[in-house]
Image 1 (cartoon, rainbow, N blue to C red):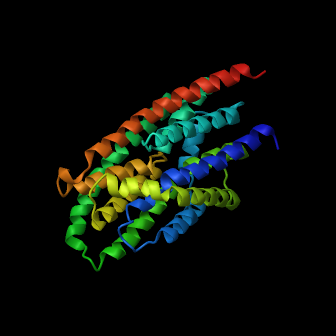
Image 2: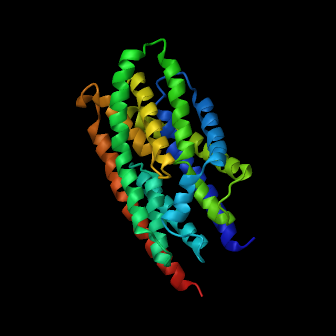
Image 3: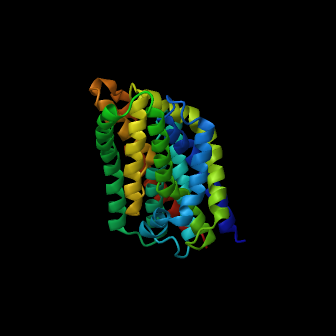
Length: 314
């Protein structure tokens, strides 16, 4: 196996673990105030869907590979490796400073910057379209969550809310597996040199993701379930339904969006039904600031690293 493939496979595995740390807790966090889905059951469900759903559809993974930049060109594996390493660096630095951010934004910036730095064909139109969907998704999630919360206030009660939660959690897990979770698979696609996926690849990715989720659940869960809003269980259920529906709609268009961003937006929308005072705006602003820094920082770092690496290679 060529050295560039071995390195990229190792980087892909690390990326899957960090994705679990960053995303897994966020997905489970909204329902932590309900005992319906235990964390262990939730992680197993999420891991199973991350392994299985991409076998049916992985259009979002192909968007990462083909539409931002053409990573099948010569040097594509090197550029992809640089993009992932720089994306992880930005996310880990921001997280260490208490500003957890979107790994999806980071990888979009990293892929774009590395593509430009390596001299690969980069589609400005596709990058703009992905960014447009990414910016709109949290706003749409907030609006949908506001409406869903009002609906659940009429339809749900203490007896039926656990059933609503089970449905909402499955919807959210399906959404992640069909959309945001496929950023991990994009790296394995480039490493394997084929757009086709097999169960072995998706199962390995899902297992590594699950390990990361187990480690990252307490921190990510605390941030979203306690810091953004003073939440009630109904808010969490509404946020799951709204975020899941929004992300699935984006997946149908082949557009990657960040589940953590959409969940955060949905929690704010759900909280707003009880008045703006229920939202902890300082936490929301802190998260939004990290989002704004993530993409340009990843693009700049990856662009400089890719340009330097290409110039240094014989």
